[in-house]
Amino acid sequence: MNCRIGITIAVTAAVMITAGCGKKKGPTRPEEARSLAEEGWKLFAQEDFTGALAKFDEALELLAEHPDANHGRGWTLAYLGDFNEARFALVMAKDLDGDNPDVWAGGAFVFSALNNQDDVVYWAEGALFWNEEAYGSDHEWSFSKRPSITHLHLRWVLAKAHLARGSYAQCAQQLDILESGVQHSLDPQSLLADLLRLYSQFPSPF
Image (cartoon, rainbow, N blue to C red; front, side, top):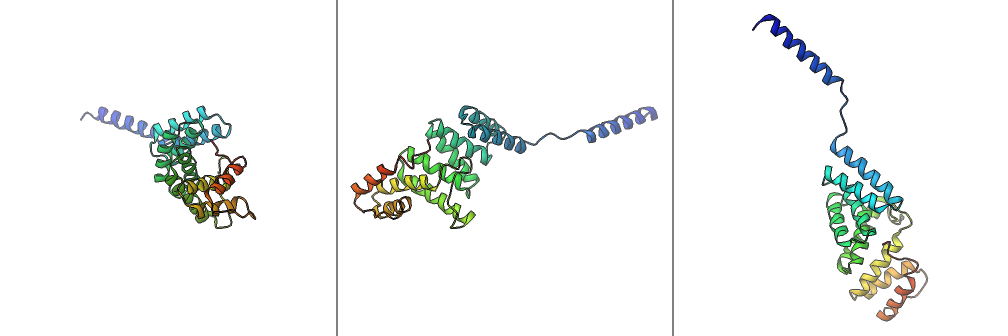
């Protein structure tokens, strides 16, 4: 090889390496997805659910298995009234982040809207279980993104599901928590009346 050509190649390579080292690396796909999910939750807090959904969808285009984006998409779709799609998003979020009580609670509310009582019980009890695992038995669940939604709202849909399934003792047990000091009958008509009376205090979030 001609000596001059060899020197030129070496110098060019050195310049390229130096230039490459000087460049800042851009955010990775997981980092971009996380940032978009955070923007989505901010819009969710402002009740801009259409905008929030767009951000969660952008995040999922980058990383389809991003747990928080699936979680946010599920809650947001529920607020937009699309409970079927919300269900799929929350199931994905649960599979990716199975110890997050917020995900489980979202599923319980969505399945309640879909009148799938068996799944309401499964998801609501999961939310209460993982909340206790994370924070201890003295800590009552509330939705981290909207703290006005609490374990009492969750227990109301759980009580309703137990009543629909004919599990009257379990329904009364939840009502005892919702309304401490009140004697709740196991008669189904009485339980239904109590649920209806309490609905205005603990309505579904959606």
